[in-house]
Image (cartoon, rainbow, N blue to C red; front, side, top):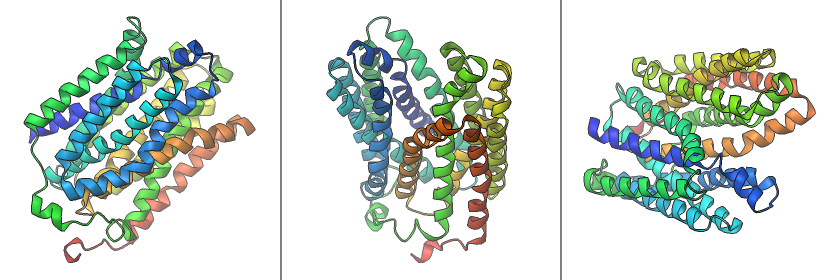
Length: 383
């Protein structure tokens, strides 16, 4: 099982390198085309929007045809996306299409990989192994922008050729090594509909997932502009702080998640959300770079703990792991689309209100976990 988890971890690592590799390159691309700065945000947003619209569909497909096929389809699609971005690097319309293709197949890779982890783990060790995959996601997100900036010194298209090569190699490795985790008979028995199994007592968990990602994306969208006003922070310093926070995220996934016992997830979720809300509440007290880094680290630690615990808990409450992870990723993507929009709008009205509102929303979202605890779990064996 460890070899399989390692391969799934590698897949998500490359996916999130691909997610981040474009970040330092987009501004230069748009500047070279003399395009509007609005394209910078939209090229990032369409990726998450495509994931939001299709991740739930991929989850149902994974429950019907199996995880391995969905992962292979996702790897092939991601490879095409990177190649297209590299080949049409000077054509804005093609870049949008490439990003939409990337978002479309990112949903396939996430739902296929995470439902695979849920299939081959027990309730007792699922937190541990989902934490490992989460750690790879965090490290990929850290290294992606760094690789993009470094490799772009060769040429602005070079990082995407390298990424396409990584994904093609992973496709071949997956094709020859990864076996299907879901028996064919079980796959035929499962319905792709998630109406029955992903409603009822799971609704609070999905809403909580949305809030958690909304806060994360909102902070990512406002942190730099607030700290420019507050402490005159530089782009280099912002990159450094987010790199450190990414390492903390990976440390939480690879460390704390390994210690969380089955049945205690909600306690850790509540604690993590209190910690992340505290980090947001403290943010206006960022009187220098050190304080800004400490408060960002506090938020990151709580948010990292909450995200993985919630997904692990969701997969334990339904046998449709593909549908569950697909719905979760879809909601996560919606939060990534709306977070920067909502919180930059609040920021324009009042900078301080941004973090006070986010902190309050984080605390209030704990009531969703309390509501989940009070609901009677769905009896899966009777469905």
